[in-house]
Length: 318
Image 1 (tube, rainbow, N blue to C red):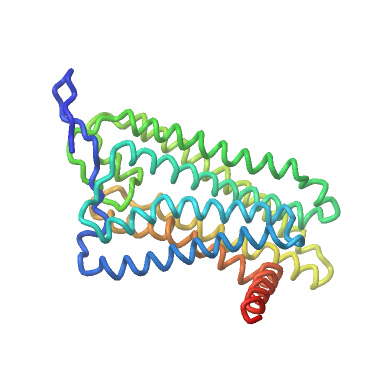
Image 2: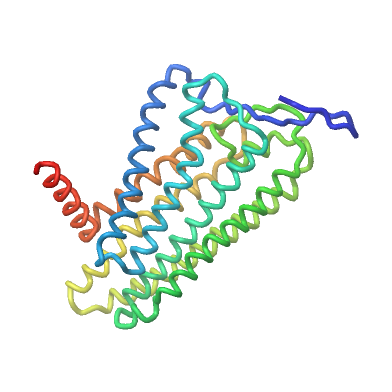
């Protein structure tokens, strides 16, 4: 759909059409079922992590406080993309309004940037826990934890607001077909018929700054952790230190690995399928994997889930 702007009598796009995976019509039903299962597991798994960290007093620590926020972010940014992806797989109407598209982009961008720095905050938390265990509860006070979380959300929102503004002020007067299943930055930008230099520069600066800063915090934290671990005389302490970091390191490798993959994909028509697949991995798979990673490798979480399950079973059997 388009509307006419009076001054230059140009056609301006007011709605977009999401192409999704429509070129693979024979895969629409299987993809719908797969993504529906993954989304259900994502919601149940992340909600389970949040509930478990609330009901078990042993998990009322900074690490699990940050983990519950990580689960909340996973649920949020998965819920921004996945429902629309499921919708366009089963209905003929694949349109999204301009305002709806900008809103979707704002929230997905805000939640992803927030999660990027939440992982960095969790790396700092592991650094304090391993390198200064006696001062851990003092150093990672409730007030500091709350400020760190509030800071990540605020920074994510500010960066996203800047990028969303840079996209919204562009003119869209040509094709309104987005070759994607959502309002991904490069897919929307490719439809612009005005100079995108400001938006591209803003995206480059914000993306590079955020990725560099978050990775530097993570690398510095784990460099000190490795140094501390190598100086530990007992194997028991070595194993405990490693076990507290293994889940977080796995989540970091998957998250930043896919981000770097998206950065490395050339912005050309032949690369759109790879961009879509990478985005699926990022917005659909990662939110499902995180609760599995933390649950499978964490004894306290597994024990709380087991006790909760047993109590539910026994209450139903009575």
